[in-house]
Image (cartoon, rainbow, N blue to C red; front, side, top):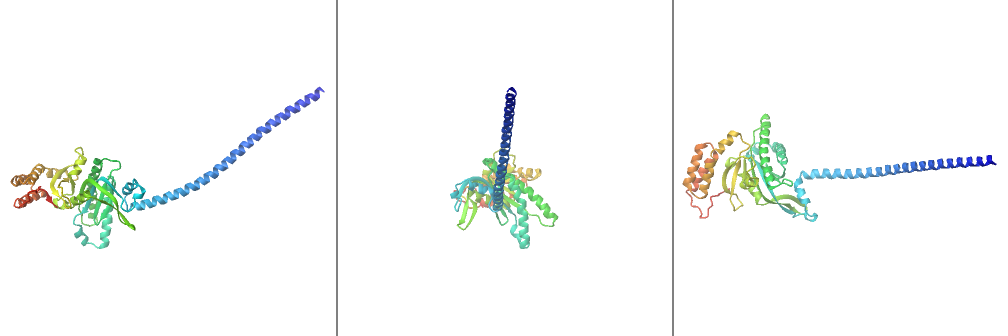
Length: 358
């Protein structure tokens, strides 16, 4: 009996051990099965995600391509201004006011130059010229609003920047444009082409950025008194034999801490505007010797202009004659002397404010 009891006990223990091992094995198999199933689900989900990502990426690439193409016709900065408005306002008639620096640059004597070459040569030249003038503008936080024949109109609206930064960007771009022109003329000389020159005008003030046209044909544009002033300043470059002309508003916006050499040119009233403005010539791109030569008579010129404004003709002429003694080859001094001698003998209106109209 004892041996039977022992045998049954041993059998029970054996069965218990086998059961425990079976349960553990079953659990391990179940765990492995679940893990394998989870991996398969993850792989499936990953495959679906990969397909979705591929579709989204393809759509994003296409959108980027369209955007890059679109930006060749409409500046990115212009689009960003529009994007900050309500969607409903992005159609015809959209308008937003902003304070920016406006710059015009134009090739001197372009009409005569274009007559001496074929239409295809003219097109090749313009594209070559515009390509080289593009970088100095973009690298100084500006963007080209439009090309007008041989002229470039660009805006400087420093992202998140102050008015001072915007005005400084425009002046820096003008100085870099002059450097780019020197390099470009060097290449033209090596190819036996004649050198070209350009004038630059800069003003700072409010503009209206918007869309004009009709429902089936729209265009972006920038309008306002500030645009007119910048354009007129550029047109005065040949008159004053200056490379870069800026308004007093530009220098006021920049402030006195910016290392830029300038000299007073005149007190003028540009077409389309009632209020006269002071205009200045930027000298920083010139050689040190040339800067000193032009600044040598600056005090006499400024005093002479002040006397002219007050119709103190004899005093004005005296100051300009003193200036020409200092800088006999300065065309600016000769210009002021001629103006004084002409206006001295005119019957001027009682409210004449001394401004020359251009």
